[in-house]
Length: 476
Ligand SMILES: Cc1cc2nc3c(=O)[nH]c(=O)nc-3n(C[C@H](O)[C@H](O)[C@H](O)COP(=O)(O)OP(=O)(O)OC[C@H]3O[C@@H](n4cnc5c(N)ncnc54)[C@H](O)[C@@H]3O)c2cc1C
Image (tube, rainbow, N blue to C red; front, side, top):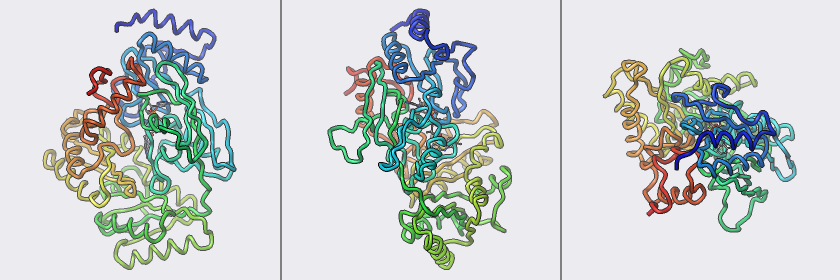
């Protein structure tokens, strides 16, 4: 369908003439809306829309549907697969003006939040009433609840609380044609047909725009204890995780594995201080969240002592102050600074069965080093959730890193270990060529059928998730 751009512009201007802050055009569009954290070459959208209400989102999508204008939803723009990256001629829809916690029901443990609310603000609101919103990730200050839901974000506490999907009770979503799907459920049990909210959780802006969410809150743990563990080798990571799980069970709220290559760069280049006197074979940041002030610390201390005695750990430091806790997490989260320190990098976010994690890292790294002897790499991840991150840099290739070949080598190793090409960041633009390694043809065809039904004109975030959108007639 060919669009008359000047007609689209005119219709948009007329439809939102009552709100000066709604639309921005051309050079007036702030540069941050021309790309996301993935840092792909910037694309200036046709327009930037900043709706304030669900009604405005509905009007906007109705108009874009009618004119066949592509739309790209944008939250905090911290996504790492190019999901919020504008496409040519699109209207980028920023949710920044739809921000705020509308209601907290402390007795029921629920919170109603607008989609553009930064995660950190939602966490603080839960905290203020003595409850906890357990989703947590390094981008907490910028990423939004809408983006978290649309990517089914994981983060640091999946091991205890599950990913974003497990925290969502209800959603309000504006569909591609502008109709508003109210699925604002507050009930934990509700077996009344298809649970539609799950279609939109992890849909990466390809099915509709999430405008509100009802989130589930948890009791605030009475104790949170953080420790840094040094291990004799990376092979000791999985048995250590198993030992801790069997000793402190669901109180284990984080197990962040760090291979020595990661540790060395963070300590030597990112200026973080190691609490250990010497280098070790691997490291793990662990967190215990419990409800027994009297006994939690002792339980953890005994478990760690036994693990030291059994040779699973070679050293442990338990944080004694909140500053020390912050310093320990600072080591793990310094990863956000690596790009400015190390230049051009390729990051991988994959899932691998935990027992194969170290073998996978060794296999991928050996294959990379065979091809480029000067390749450097860092490995770390949320091991309790099977989630491994590898960062690769090939200095000999400077900025012209042979990305396709590096991708092929790493994803080939993922497929060999029966892993997933995306653990928590999604597919977006950068991984769509590898979706077939983790999803069967019939799964992809079913996803395409859902897309064709909910977005028949293909205006929602086109070119993301799938290499090519199929029309209804083409779907087998
Ligand atoms: C330092 C750092 C650390 C990170 N750590 C983690 C981590 O531990 N775990 C993890 O999972 N991710 C992590 N991320 C990735 C990122 O923060 C998450 O994917 C986050 O959920 C994205 O939220 P956002 O609001 O920034 O979304 P955006 O980047 O703006 O958008 C992401 C996707 O969601 C869509 N979208 C956004 N808002 C809406 C909406 N309202 N309705 C429909 N679609 C929408 C977009 O179109 C896009 O496809 C990290 C990123 C950084 C920079």
